[in-house]
Image (cartoon, rainbow, N blue to C red):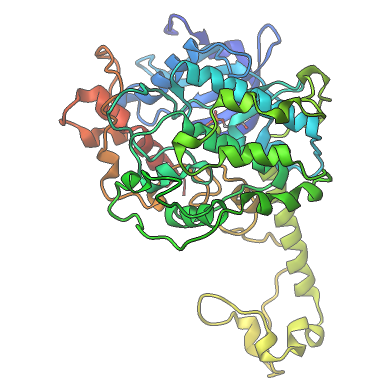
Length: 498
Ligand SMILES: Nc1ncnc2c1ncn2[C@@H]1O[C@H](COP(=O)(O)OP(=O)(O)OP(=O)(O)O)[C@@H](O)[C@H]1O
Ligand SMILES: [Mg+2]
């Protein structure tokens, strides 16, 4: 007999249409309710039934239920599929209104051109959503293009509250600095600050505005140190005059303490990209980005400050959402990445087939001087090169023209270049990904606790999830250690996927 989960719908009330996203916590599917409403269903990964429902997910759901704003995604339902002898909830879905695009998918799709009115409209909606969150003392902590959903009525909504949390600006308690996807992570977090506030989200907003013009993530470091040096090479190195407190942020023993001195050249770096997008250079937009991407968090523009910036009242004005033309094809990071991966794999297959069919004497590499020949990484050259120089009798390995090309990780294919250029998890693992062991985290960082997280009433049905046990018997009880397990839990999932 089916168990009833009060307050939740039965999963049978929905049917899944196709997958539109894959995040750290599970897949996102487009679906339809019995009443014909098109929705998105985000499946929560429950690794082991015996470990209970992840408290991290409960926190996300709790937050989302409290939020109500046109530019913040709304949770419309929870759908539960129960099976097994115990009748326990084995699959749990969060149900959201379906949004046809995310900003990452739009930017990554070369056939989508956003005009300046549209860019201004999305920016304005982003700041309105952020202003609402910050007015209610909520930090998002994972702003990036893939987490900004856009529908065909031109409405932008901030989504993915998996790392969000309430905060108290007057609190002196510590929070973890291992939040925000690296390419959007502000310098204070990269340095290791554990006292921070809403300014961390404004840095991400500045990166997003710049990305709408550059159509690539602005700062793409492969490690925290590289991320910092990339930022400093464009935004100027920190100094005691502009950011007197910058050394106080350095809490991690491995953080580099000295950086080469660079002047600030953010505007000069961004200006050429306007022309590439067929825009005239826009000094007011550059000024707004310049005021968001300020190293010192206290000097960064707030969401309210951004909304009052003259850019928004200079023509072209922000296009009203309902006047933004709908985009025929759904564009999510996942779909665009998949399409690009398929195209790259097809191109690689065609190239390999061409090489395989090439008459031996006309192989392009045969005519090259050895020093011109492509350099093969990783030791001995492949057998095909043994025959270079016209040595007879050593056969070239051939692949039948239609044979599938093995696709490895890191190859620009299904799990490759598109995601790497976008900073989206999970395919770009180690690039713009959420905090992982590649982020230069010190050993044992997973045992950190965010001591200021409000304690919740103990609920014996909820047990801390896997990674949270590290802080175990330490101060704070299971609910705090589960909170500390927030990022490690994701980290474990990342690991298991790769
Ligand atoms: N309501 C929605 N409508 C349409 N697509 C959605 C919706 N919600 C999420 N998606 C798609 O699914 C993707 C992943 O969703 P989400 O960010 O909520 O999951 P996540 O597991 O927290 O992801 P990640 O760890 O990659 O940030 C989004 O980037 C978006 O493309
Ligand atoms: Mg996400």
